[in-house]
Image 1: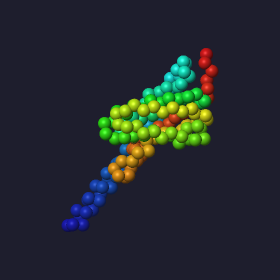
Image 2: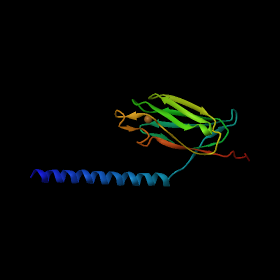
Image 3: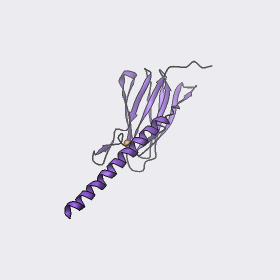
Image 4: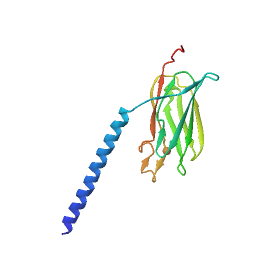
Length: 154
Ligand SMILES: [Cu+2]
């Protein structure tokens, strides 16, 4: 009697796990299909490329950014989270970017840097949640900064 109950319990757990892994797989693939890179706005007066990014648990929006190489970039990170602190981390010193900036909840924080090499660079939130059980990055709080060649203006 007891073994039977245990078996059905195990089966239920297995089904939940299988379903969970399938649903996360399909989510990941649909994300890749709909990748669109948001171009930073180049301010002609100060030659700074500017972009606003919304920050919440657990995402950046937009999370695919495109900027020009060898031009200063300013990302304004606007936290709309009510309790949790996030950060903006981008570790690519070979491309002139070595950023780790805390974003207190509900605050606006700006990061400024100049990418010196083209390519795709991952940025993410390096904070941990639930006593280090998972990272915000694991929950999807990440994105891609695409650095492209300088295009001549028409
Ligand atoms: Cu975070």
